[in-house]
Length: 466
Ligand code: ARG
Image (cartoon, rainbow, N blue to C red; front, side, top):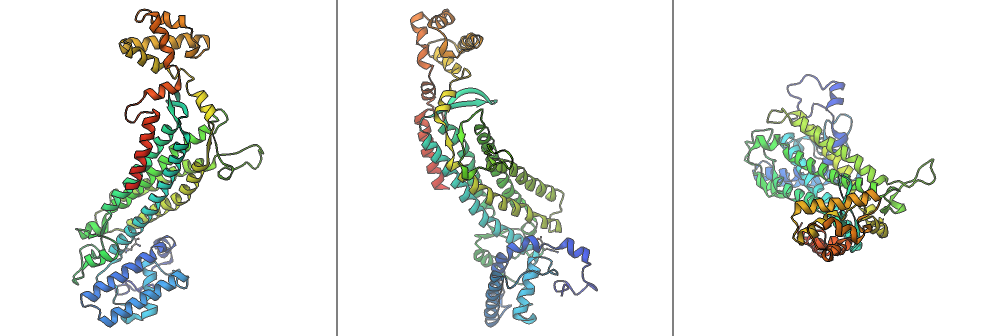
């Protein structure tokens, strides 16, 4: 029975050790539905080419329907002796049709063009699920951005207080990369939109089968142009794996931020109880496990990509069994993202910011020093000097353990004396507010409330178009 696929020139079946190594049904069985769809299309191509009579085609289609039914109900499943999903399904089909009819289906195709087609079908379908999950997360972030209103928080570079920014601006900074990930999936899908079915093992088929018809039936708008490339290329799998890894990295960066914001020292955000975990020993603990798992799983998603790239490196360009390794990488990634994304979105949707604390922290750490320098520039002071003067103000404040707004009028008059008259110098206080600071950053892409509202609107438009 295990000789079913290549019995002719063999005098024995595979050794048990080989069978154990070779076996892939434990992971590739999830391609069974796609394989049956491929078989249906292939049967029609055989009929079209006159290699199955009308009657045979009708019986073949009925048998494939029955096989699908048995697969759906679990009545038919792989057994120990099946090498891969294709081997198993052939066994299932033959059991329904008998060898005579069922044995005709394999004409003109190989498991090489089959598997190359199936993985594309599977990835394209999953890409849509992932895109939709990522868009849900974007929606949750945008809802938080809307709810954040004009709340200002410390903007950081090098993790140091840098300039105040709107909380909404910071949240939206995580939306854009995610929207780009969705757009990556979209344009990747266009490249993936070609069917290798009909490539045979590598050189094409001699039977006059119409691969365009098969492609259309399987949801592809075209056929691969080179049968060797069609069966050997896995760059599309690697690219899909990259996008999944990138989504993981984007989630991880947001996770890191949420984890820090959620510490007692920051106390910027509180996570909902239903999206937090406790400790088995410390009764007071409430942990941000979703963010930590997302951050941790980014490593795994990257590992899947890296493993696949290493597998592909150095492979000759035609099918080699190494290529079987492409599947677990992306299966694992998709399984991972399918559990991470919904939990992550729920956490984001329900987290609550402490607006008062964010506002209070926003101007601290001399975060308005740039505003002083730029105010001086608007008053005609060259930036090089403005930078120094503002730095001098920081130095005074730091020395006294004060903030910039604690300096006296005389302090400012003294520091600016070489450049500005006293009555102008004291007006610096106008820019010593976070609201003034953010409002002033009103160029496109800036953190002023107007620009941020515009930005959220743009993100909504872009989302519609994705
Ligand atoms: N199971 C293989 C894979 O997933 C396809 C079978 C090709 N085997 C072969 N001996 N050509 O890549």
